[in-house]
Length: 329
Image (cartoon, rainbow, N blue to C red; front, side):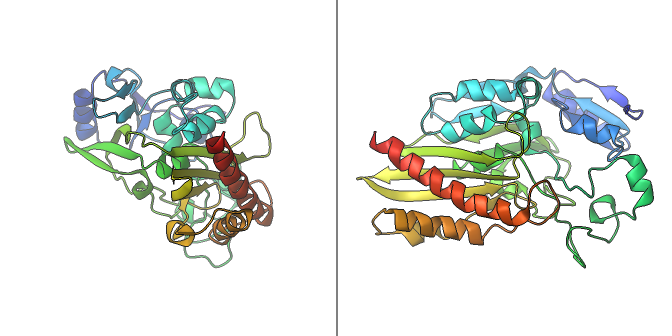
């Protein structure tokens, strides 16, 4: 398969990028690592008239620790560099684990954090060749009114499969965008629509960087991933957990799922559930059951949906036990 025709641009500054987008007529797509975008273009799932590479913008490729201890991560930081930066960092361990499990080493060398978090949703009825598209009536994601995965559905259930978004959400990360020459920040969890056909609510804004708050004492995190092939596949279920421990008790807990819906699933009401309760295996099982009940995968990617849901419960239990064990050591 070959790429469709397009016009290519490679601005060297954010200002030039902004001006370029303002002046382009027609569909323009941002290119970073290209590990997700270019295969979709080859399959003719997307055929932009203009392709704008942001890899030459030096401002976007750095990780900085600010004076207030916040961490800023440029949109084009490579996944491998992200993993190396957070290695042996207990509060942000979930980011290291997730980044280290993205694809293969070759993919991690090329892919960027921005591309990983803003990757498109997937479905075995959508991610098909042009020949398939010509045979089958278009689904919701291709502009039609059919869902092949969920009968009579009025919306698209294509699956969001980023490894890195869930850890950023439980660690309260924010994303910064440029829109009409203004910089706008919003929590990572707020950039998603929950609709697989149009997964992001960022419009024509340009992703600039991510911001992580300064780590607090007692915070530890981890990430668990379920996939078909350990060496390279996207998660068909994933769990990120962050807990804050004070006086040998869990003061706060955040859980986010990936690979089981059209957006990351933030598990609700966990903090109130654990309030004033002694941490036992029974309580951890109950928390895992809550995560299980809020996961609703469908049969539209690899792996049985019921098994993927069960794995959410299993990985949530393992993640919390692992965190408690690492804190006590």
